[in-house]
Length: 124
Image (cartoon, rainbow, N blue to C red; front, top):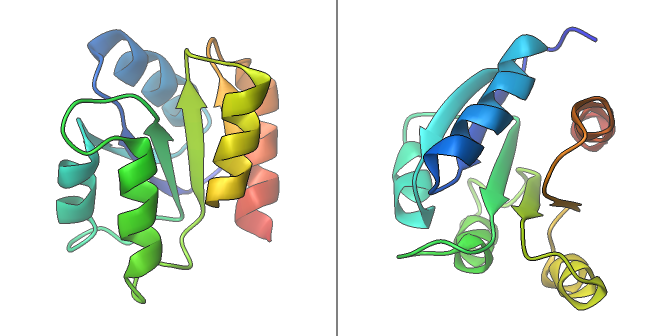
């Protein structure tokens, strides 16, 4: 599946940045990296992404706070935001959906399923 999306990836750990970026770039996406929610919000001034992928647990502004900031701004509220986390549980998954994330993915990611689900979200 070839894609031409612009994605902001909000991830504080180098290994996870590399893993998720590689999956997305392999399929043709352009990935803009942010190490926390503050950097993501700053990037939104110059990048109009098709999607934001954010880790939930990060120093500074975490994924939950990033979602709130994105949704609070009328210029960015429409952008799909998906959560990824290594701290997977049924409660966290339910909390993420309730909070307004468009999807939730536990790490490690399954590349084919991940990209297929993202394409469904972007098509909505």
